[in-house]
Image 1 (cartoon, rainbow, N blue to C red):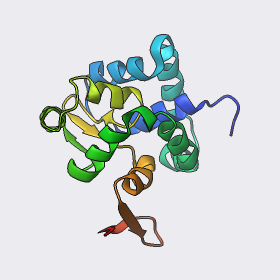
Image 2: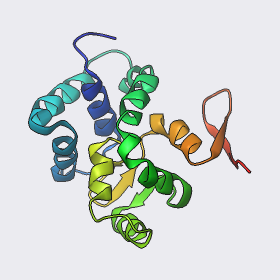
Image 3: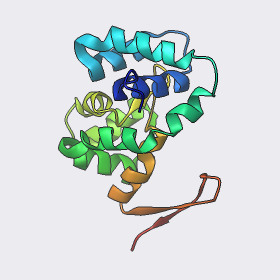
Image 4: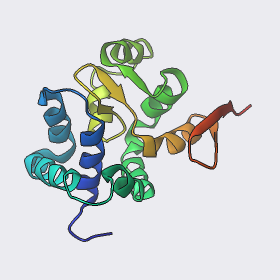
Length: 163
């Protein structure tokens, strides 16, 4: 990997290209949660990475999906039950308010969504919608007892529950 592109910049660039709101307050809050005091530097470098000429940024990031998944899964250990519940019962994301209620009804504390965002397991697409990054889906589905069947193009063809 290019020494000048850190895993945090790749992760931030991934969220940038998937963020679809004009107001960046929620995006900045996600970056602050994940990167702490370095959040503005990571955001700046992610924006620079996204705006580099040449190959499509999605394709550039896709080459590092395994590394990004390893990075996030390394932080999932403390949130295994919440990540499992997210995959098994909540559909890998959705409306933040609905997810908060679902987690609360399942007995999780009020901060579980914040902690999942901090770990990079959830990201905001906009102010109200959370999603699981594409590079984490296969790993989380394995955690949730679901096997993915991929077509040769890499698209999800089916999800088969394990019995």
